[in-house]
Length: 177
Image (cartoon, helix red, strand yellow):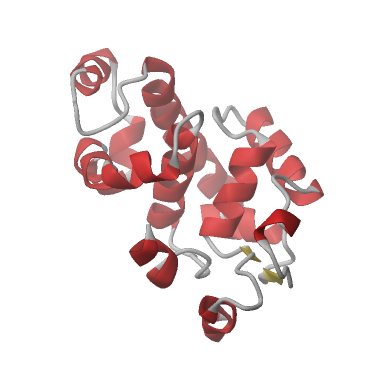
């Protein structure tokens, strides 16, 4: 958890593969702890072909059954199927917008939003933008993309900088802007 916070969380991500990975992991986390998902991250990378969007989109019932017995991931059929369906939807977005990155970042005006929270209890669970993104993703067939999951996703991929102002990472991640 510390390593993830200190090196990755909040750094702007613009790579479609990485964006798909983080969306998948955030969706898998629903109802569970982030620590549980991070412990299985390497299992997810292996199970979902390093989050190769095209390969994941081509998974069928045979692959789903194999994934259901994979102890390296959360073996929840709905979450597994959502990953496959979300991959198909990402491919459709790429056709329409050129990239998943362009689509997502447009919601934030193509630049990170820097919040200046002094304590964790000031950080919201969702925002108007996370609701907008969530609603649009749902219209496009995505699953496990509620506004709270999407806000956590936005934090993870740096669309918002929610490091507390006293955290050493608050200024560090801004070097990536």
